[in-house]
Image (cartoon, rainbow, N blue to C red):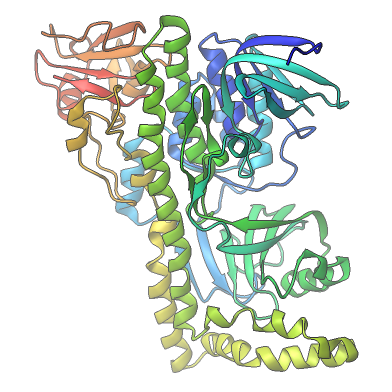
Length: 573
């Protein structure tokens, strides 16, 4: 049906201004692709939300010519080293884990990349990405604008509402659906998700509180709190002013309405101490899911980030998988828009990214399930954790005085409290329990030390990798073995050239393919292999580190390695 609304035209419409959408905007600008980004919120994420920015995501920022030092500066708890299991944060830990791993794995991490995993609150991360995105000439960033529908089912033609609810239209060659876990675009296209949509529900309280003088484990990033009065997790984003308390909510026996200001204040007093000033700056509900979209693309629409997958936070792979989605897709859009690459290239987005998302989803869900190993050692049955909430919801309690209700709840949870106190006892039995707890905690290391998952995923199918990629070996979740085989990320190798120290990762450019050679090479790829994109040649013989490069890249004389703009090996001789 004809419309009288104003119509804008653009190459790409990005719907959603979270980390995936903003990074897509930055990379599109990097490749000189005009685009519009719309975000229904009035600004960036208000709550700290996610916090793990892993090694590969930092490498992706580096590939976009972003100064990563600026991003590392947003880590407000840089001295954090541990995850601690405690009664509450004012108590000494029953056991703790170094999330960097042992000395061997720390060495492996340092050798694997010029970048490293860091902790940045998502609202700060988004702010930094937004500031980068708005500086680009190719972008139009619009907060307060909402995607409403595709017009007459045409996925090139969208109806949008501005911040004043005035409608206008955008025609775009491609749509990137970065509109989150409840993606309106995915729903409109009938794209479902496979996997449980509610593994657990949490109350999130962002707290302005200074922990520096009250905690016993000052270098902990996470606290697993075992007290039956205040079960949950504390995430320390900034020890001087921002900690998030995540408390399980047991539906249908309770909802967020059962946690009014008075109850939240009482809970936080139990956690941080009655005399510690605490201000709640954000309160919300979050449902943990483990789902992957059945489709990552339909025609000209591509799902990226949370619209394509939802993971438990156990491992911090959600936001980072979204960054990987974007990095995989945007250069393919450029090849299609500018060089008329065949449709198979864009089809390879789903073929490559969906298996990675499924693997990351399964890993995250497994990490979540394994956490019960610690409480099992303490004799705490998580299948009974809902009982206090069920008791609170009973009709009988409505007629009892609040003081009596509190006494009954304390009596109900007394066996749990007794088991936690037994673990703290300075007795032979207490020491035995703590030793068993530490063994169970040590078994959680893959939850926190995941270099194989961060850097070791392999693209195996589609037209953008050689069929030999199907033979490339897998990495484990924890261990990463550098490999320059087809489909793998090109290894980081530091080398000297003209008196400077460089890395192979910086030789790669996001706007072109890179051909690494060892002297004159034969049977090198043609422009069909690079989908019309330019190809830059780099001869390792012109470096000061030929031997190291030959060994690390497995690149004998006369051979070559063709690397895609996203740093994955397309093919090799």
